[in-house]
Amino acid sequence: MSMMKTVLNTAIFSVLFLSGGNLSAQVSPIRLGVRLGCGMSVNTGMDKILVPEDYYSNYNFKDKWQLTPTVGVFAQYHVDGSIIGVEGGFSYWQKASQLVYNDNKELNYKVTPRYNYIGVSALLKIYPWRKGFNISIGGRAGANLNGKGISYESNQEESKFANYHFATVAETERLMKEKLTGQPDIAVGGGFGYEIDHHWAVDLRYFYGLNSTIKTEHNDYNWAEHSTHGQNIELSISYLFKL
Image 1 (cartoon, rainbow, N blue to C red):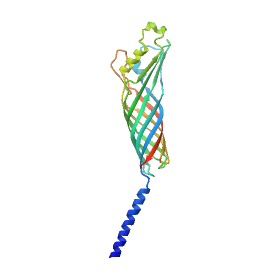
Image 2 (cartoon, one colour):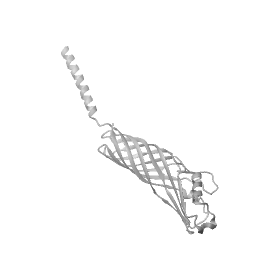
Image 3 (tube, rainbow, N blue to C red):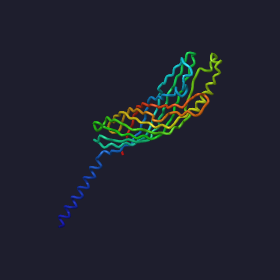
Image 4 (cartoon, rainbow, N blue to C red):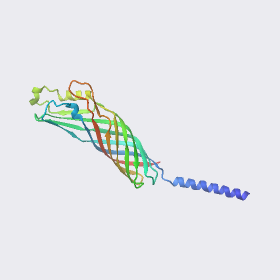
């Protein structure tokens, strides 16, 4: 009886020891990461705000992409050998664009909204080969930190436009900041990434804004409410820490 008890105790101890050893040897599926990146952004539709109807002709608008930064901290869950993972975190990003106007009178101006956001993101990650390369899809939502973030440049103060009695550049910019207000950002997106040795990751992602980037307040300048949607393309590098 005592021999059986000794064998049983030894077996239980062995199972507990081996289980503990296997658990400690496993790679944790949870990683914490920091991300730094940059990209390009554009916001289309502003021309319909500033010139909502065919008041005149012989002019053109052009939307130009702008450089933007992004930084973030996130948590990632991916079991080694699994095809599915998830990622969520907090990020700072920008949405920016530049609308360029030119006409046959040689009047030109540039309107550049540049908004800062801080918010949360959540993405589903698919690993076709169970590690390394992955496809992500999800979205992010953030609060606008500078709703008056529009700048304005123009040659409208040149003497050849004196008969038009344009406002000064400074006054025009002030009115735009007052009447064209940046909104929160709600976007969907995704992209491609590659993870190296469970520590480094490179991601290329695209986000499309679901809600209008700019709200037009009531004004006396014929600026009209029109839906504008921002787009961001971001390339980032991340470092992931073991837990």
